[in-house]
Image (tube, rainbow, N blue to C red; front, side):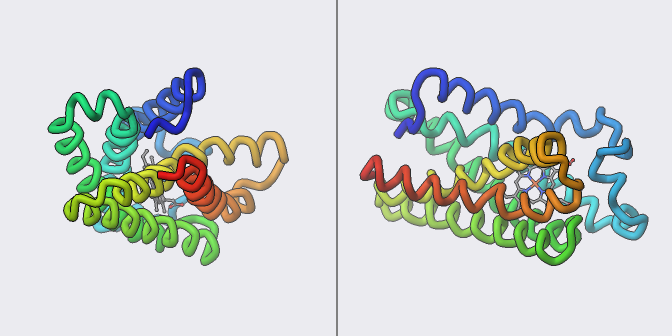
Length: 206
Ligand code: HEM
């Protein structure tokens, strides 16, 4: 299943790699600059060793999920390199499990209050659920079901991309306050992605 063609696919891969490598530059970026996430955190959260460990597990393993996921949808490449597909798939699943669990933890402390915290928590739970289903179905050799769950899972991984597209649009174009935009985007970054995946599954009749 390759769900985009030509230019669309190139743009999709470009964004997946761009956002996927972003966490590896995290140490180089001014993390306490005006717009940086860490600058918005309370001294208590920043001093918490658990939060810090969970946060970095989340962003680095999220990066692995983002970078490994896209190539798995290339049918020809997959069929020619099934063992590679299986190995990379296991790396993806492990990365999502750990990034998802730590994502659930950091969601509890997310900016934007309860609505944003619930949005990110819902995303983490949906990510863990769809990815587990994708793994369990392929263990049972249910290839079509596996494809559907993987499409849902990776559509959720893409929340990291859509969030970074919406945020500047909401702030820059619509002139919205960061925190108002963040609360909306905590949901908007993943619910439409999931709806898109369902639509795609129906249209492709996988
Ligand atoms: C799909 C499930 C995901 C969930 C539930 C999730 C959740 C979160 C949460 C709650 C935060 C902290 C927000 C705050 O404290 O206000 C965060 C930050 C972050 N996440 Fe994720 N995330 C997910 C996917 C990813 C992926 C796939 C990546 C890989 C690129 C990623 C990279 C990051 C980064 C780099 C930050 C720091 C943001 C910044 O510097 O502004 N996340 N995530």
